[in-house]
Length: 282
Image 1 (cartoon, rainbow, N blue to C red):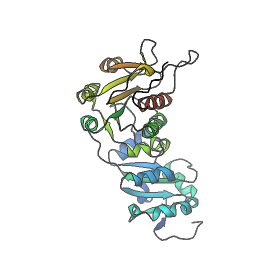
Image 2: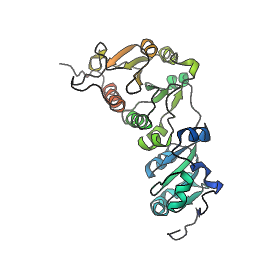
Image 3: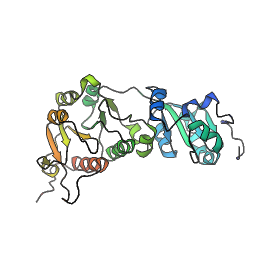
């Protein structure tokens, strides 16, 4: 190790060491999904790791490049880190562990918390975002970060939506996804989960660029609202659209076809969060 030994830190010299099995094949979504299951997830970077601790997720271990250790020392002093193994390894060892050349690694694994059901989430929230079949980790992360910024209370994801705790999602969200309750609808309950929201008093807004949809700025925001977003390109399924209360569009310049789903989410969240009685139309 290029730095002096530190109490509570163990150097890994053998890439096959089973103590770092949590960190293998990080770039393979299929392998990671099978490996992590509903048991644990990964965080990458100082801020996401702090969010892991802040959000109450119980840590499993930490893996660092030696040059990352000094800045991580204050985090090691947190009571939540008591008894958590902290490993350091040189660049070439880390590359063999994770499966690619990860520059100055800063990783942690933590146990997943149980997910609430859609009904449980609906009964405890006033503002929800619903994601159908989003398959881009960065978009899911960006939406989660915006949701926290604009005080959205929870997230419902369809059966085919990406894992909200995938490493890139956690990183792009700056760990904010970890502070939000997430419910995944079962395959047999989709899109019927939209009706579950209605039964709990929610209006549901299906976001679409269609010209015949209701203008976002013309809608009164109800006490309980769920914003329903689909994947870029394909958008929401027709059955999901039909299940919602309103089809809603964000008015944009005609020279632009549509917004990135993360940007569209942030605009809608901001509109929903505006003070009651404030109108944006003349």
